[in-house]
Image (cartoon, rainbow, N blue to C red; front, side, top):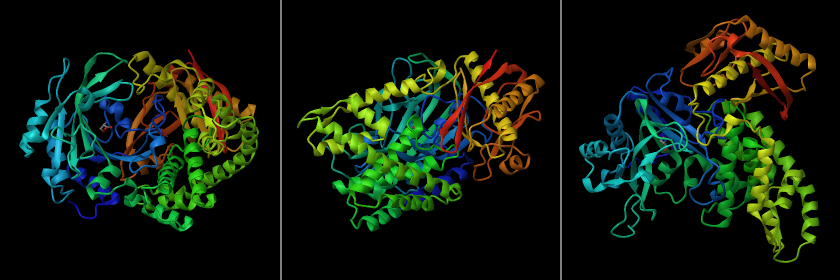
Length: 605
Ligand code: SER
């Protein structure tokens, strides 16, 4: 087994291995899904940014790709604090887009895991599972045979049904297929003669998933059809692999948390022990502050707010503050923990160094805001609590009122109420919160389809493309008439409207809005062709393209040009000519968060 395996070493080996096998690294930086993907708040799997290419679009970097993708999942947020749950984690992935298929995928997986040059895992500590087949897709005997050829004993190859060996996106819509999963024997005693990788006694831990994506589900509950290509999509959870191979008892023993834990130990004058309540506070701070650094440092930065991604970030920071209080740390010193992460990841995400001031300032601002909220919220909380008797419950609407009006987080209400022997209706809070979200969300049709927004309907696809083109023209207009620094801070497109967030320190005047709107409409009237070129990031910058200038390892980017009106780095797709767009109309200009304005606009046919 590889000695002293750290997450840094694993990331480096991942790059080296796949480069050796002719793969190109795709940038894995944004935690915020593409502008066109409005179905999920965050990037939750390494393959998510690759969906259009798995569906058949040509990828500018070719057919063999790999990435180190930060992912964020909020479904387990309440579990964070134990020895293995995280909100943000890294997923290592490699892809074949209609290039190699099962044979190479399996032999390379085996090589990476067992070859002494790479992870050097003793072969007898591995087992695999393959898809057993059902009425629509046959048993994956091919993969089983390929594993045998690698030297995997027959009794370590398990056949399981769809619930274990089939991968599809949340909501079931999108590319999918049978998978083969690789499990590591932790050395724990087996739970009985039927112990196998599908049981959760802890003996077997999944370390890598190879999905053979050759199918597509177009609509929720719809039939399977074939994708244009046979693709491979793999995913390996970095923190988990480093932990199980090292025999760690907690994923927080991973090297990426070492600096933060050391700092917390110093600040709190307490020792980290993941087995007790204090350890929970350490783990929550580590997880949440790391995720906050990545959200704030993202190319499409999230800032704390009361809706969407901003709400999650607010929750992450405020929960960290609560934990810091529990550890008796001066909460303002949490920025020092954030600094540890910025430094740790500087090799892989050098942009965090440039954005350090922004990240730490925003963090600091939110911490201060929270302190004020606690002061005023406490007064209201005490008023509420005085009217309650022992054992009574604070209803969901009241808990939500504390949150919405005073920024008082639910966790804090629960914690304080507990001290008075009062319960809090958590479900009721969630209901009130969901209703609030619904009200403040644009109730537009194409927005939440469940699963990824695969625009299956050509008409819908076209609408999204046109609004995306309009977004570029708007961005260019803002640069020209508002400020050369009016850079994109966020973008969200539904079939009904575009929403664009940009850096700007003032409310736009009527005159500015008119100029920008006219600029877009002039570009539409000029009916210029929209062209796309692939070039290095350097050349893109030189050409005067605007857009997000973050990329590593010299990869190529696509630059979309719309006559003299706009030149921007982007992944597409767009309309063919500007004349196709109809009339552009700005509906609303408002503040999005401090230093960021938001425009909502539509196209009228
Ligand atoms: N899509 C698969 C997963 O998320 C493999 O990348 O596990």
